[in-house]
Image (cartoon, rainbow, N blue to C red):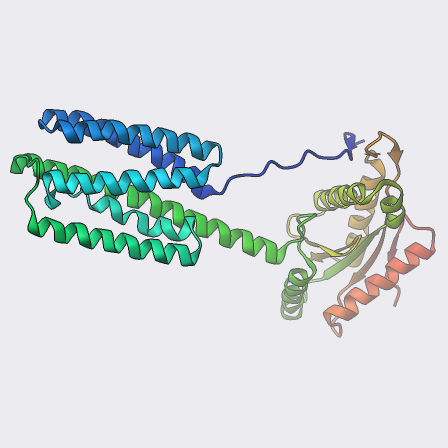
Length: 353
């Protein structure tokens, strides 16, 4: 007998923050680490103003990191924007455009469209472009206020370029991963039943048609099982729809466990399931249906209050014939299912005509 499973109310899934904000926290950590390195670097280059600016920058990133942890996203984004814009501007004005501090402004471009609505992102992008151009033009008319040696300037430039290159690579990888994950979820939503995780009716129809096309080419037998939970409405009425949903989930799991990996299984509608068994003759399909029925009988079903209930299933079995289309093959299995219901339920009937 399988291990008892309670149909108790499951804990609600904790709401997860969007992945973007998790990445933003990681970026705060990386940026703060870079600013710590800058603190020591600019002390060595005898540029104390820029060195102590990095202390303020680290403080802002720490506050932004904590704000993201508390889901105070607006405060965090404001701090990150202010830090990068002010820091980049001061870096350029103090040691020159050749320092490469302006590159940090470009990192906002992809992030804008992920963290903001389209209209706001376009406005922010225009403002960012204006600031970037204004900073560039300003350095045409003024000399750096705290210039450093050319060799040191080249070192700062290469350091900034490397950091920005690495950050862009990281963000690109994140966006690619996010898009790939979203596409995978969309495909799963389009092909599976959200409750049971089995194929939905539309995708099952597509897969079954492909299987029947293979049958017509090769002549390999293909069988159909239509399975229906007995007295399912009574379960919903007596114990609630949550208990009914849990029954559907567990029945789906048992059906999947009792059939083969190559068998196609779908939630066909309500409490009804359809299985397509490739390379399977009628008697073998009947044995498979009996195996499912017996597995359900041996399973222990408990209500949220701990009361034991009986869950049984009725099944109809048919085999695809040369003159069939998909509907006619399933209809014969349906008729067999109705006979099993009329015969007392908790039984498997095979097509007779």
